[in-house]
Picture 1 (cartoon, rainbow, N blue to C red):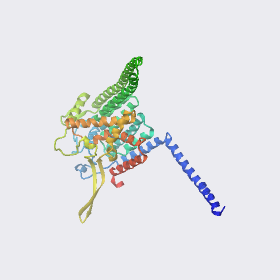
Picture 2: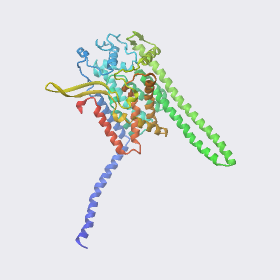
Picture 3: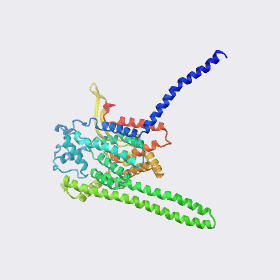
Picture 4: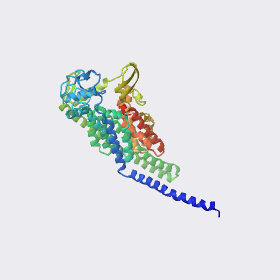
Length: 502
């Protein structure tokens, strides 16, 4: 044997021996990584990280915007963002502070709620923030930050109660934390985030088979803002879907019996016909039983919700009477009259032909159209006294993360199909989207009701669920899910209000 022949096996053996430790080390690392991810604590730690990130993003520089050229700046009060002009000033009046002369509700009776078109509870919480932290942005907005965190945790709890894994629940929470619309409303003094948070609490309780407690939570949510009552439509759709699934599954057995009866002969046909009648009766009984059980649970939820809403509204009217600045009427101790006032006020909000402004149609929301500019600070670049460029350093916009909303239609259709096959998480997500969005769409088509893009805030929890379900399916390549995650992060960064951080 020559030298080359002798050296070849030795070299090959050396390569194998050298490669074996590297391969085994890599395998051990992968196995250890899989064990960590499978740990019951891993998704909980991930949720805590997501919550910490969300809180930091929402509470960063909470005192913005600062004083500016707004006429009220001369009073020494910082500016208000968007509808804070109504709700923060109402909270000031509740807290016994007369708003500046050029602000809403100046000289309204102190201790009352001059924003009678909405319930008092969220504004009372803002007033509590003012009492604790002073009449400043932190006092107005700290409640929104807290309820934004409650919304994220309640969304996780609701998805888990529907049967999702802990990692899927953490994924839904992560998508929620990357949505600009949720972020903006979780750091400004408006009512919507309070209502959404309590809607999600009610949804989580209902999915845990606690309809009475869920109804009580719904009553609290409706006393934040009455739009929270649309959760009832969500759960009606969900229970209807569940009953329909019982009917169809019973029909599978009925079809099998029918097939045996048709292909039999003689006595077998007679026997098959009897079995067919028995199976049909069983199907009817199973469906009726499901309808009674599901309907009873839904009725308990609705009744307890109505009682809680009217009872709490009565208490609020006694403690913080609602005051209508237009008619000077005070609603104190009559929740029915107050609710009728809110309903009539909502009916008056109709769009007029040719009217311009921030109002938009629900179909446009699915394209992220008609953004609302809540607040903006722009820095201009001057050359020889001429403006040659400008860029926004602060930009609060009423826009959703485009990589969520642009998937709304396909993800919802996919969730409907998956939910029909028995996936409770997909069914919940699809019913949430349809039950909260369709009332806005039908209201626009039927009565030309004025609407705004930020109304999508109560729809978004359903979209977080259905989009995560779309990318978590077994047939979805991991690369596609990774690409979507990167796109979500990009969309979040692109819309984040404080541009100086980018």
